[in-house]
Length: 190
Image (cartoon, rainbow, N blue to C red):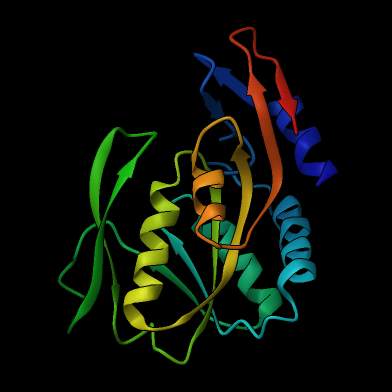
């Protein structure tokens, strides 16, 4: 998606050759106009798949997922990283290692909101090593729901997550695929 790539080139900041900061428009301060374009593209790509739920993980995927859900006219579920007192009943749970935070989280979704009859589209801001996406896929599988695919805003194609998950037969549509990032701040797209 050209507009997203242009925005990454203009406002993205490469840190140590493997971290891409896009917090000025994607995952801290959010450019809703850009999110609407992202949502339109995901609707174009997955619009015929009868999506009934959008699934993401807290926190930075939630904004994009909400705009996407508006287009699909369905609810958003976000996997929580901690079980709070207001989650009642049984949950689906798995462990996820965060590349950015260098920490392992238990992520959970209430069984009340994810059912076997659901057709789930996973939405997230980044795909790098694939841990978050793998965790979300396992929650969908545990529920017996149908995974229609994953819509990713930015994929670091030089890291193994996308290739590994595609090899498992998961449909992944990434709007900006980064081939490489240099310590000098350069970014090359696939």
